[in-house]
Amino acid sequence: MLSIFKNRSKSYKVITSLIFLSLIIAFPISIWEQNWLNTFLIFLTFLLFFIVEMVQDKYEFVLPGELQLVLILFIYAGIFLGGVAEFYYRFWWFDSLLHAISGIGLGFIGFLIAYSLRKTGKFNADPFFIALFGFCFALSLGVLWEIFEFGMDEFFGLNMQKARNLEQVYGYFDTRLGVLDTMYDLILDALGALIASISGYLYLKNGEFLIFDELVQSVEKKNPKYFNPEEKDEV
Image (spheres, rainbow, N blue to C red):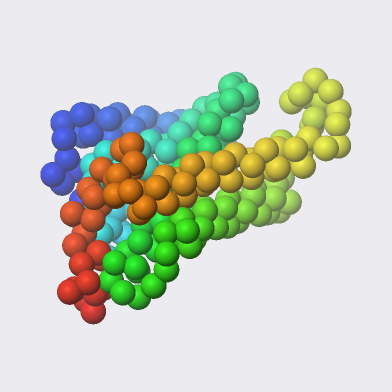
């Protein structure tokens, strides 16, 4: 399982083991029930877990344990709990919560990319443009996700945009529901990205901001070649 359990805390190993156990149990059940959509979603969850690990191994980029746990939980919640366990339909707030969190997370990743380039002298920009890059990075990926949802609905007959069988799902018919779902998602993506971008800006201006500085410094400490100017040619 690559590095997923290397140098991790006991709580991390327990939570990750429980996640994988639930997937291993659900996978043959979905095949037995011939629920091919759930089978695909479970497989996709496994695949994304391994992609995260492969990217870290290939580029020798190490996520701090707490951030990697958050990422794994987010993938599990978004695909398995949301799609297979139908949390998107059971809890009206579940999709909104994930979009807000993803906006913050992707905004943080976008900030780290620009911050790394700045630290290694490859991108000479002031704090505002570093923060702006993080915001645009997160929102761009949010848009790509909405395009993915549209494509899955269009070509595979799914209902990721919640625009099919409106009377069954919502109890009433409104042709704008699909548009509203997409726009609410993008607004939440933008708000989450804005939180991350403002946090990044304040961190660059003041050297600290809530827990943002601790997260950045933790990533920087574990990945010196991506943030150390003396090692920039090795990246």
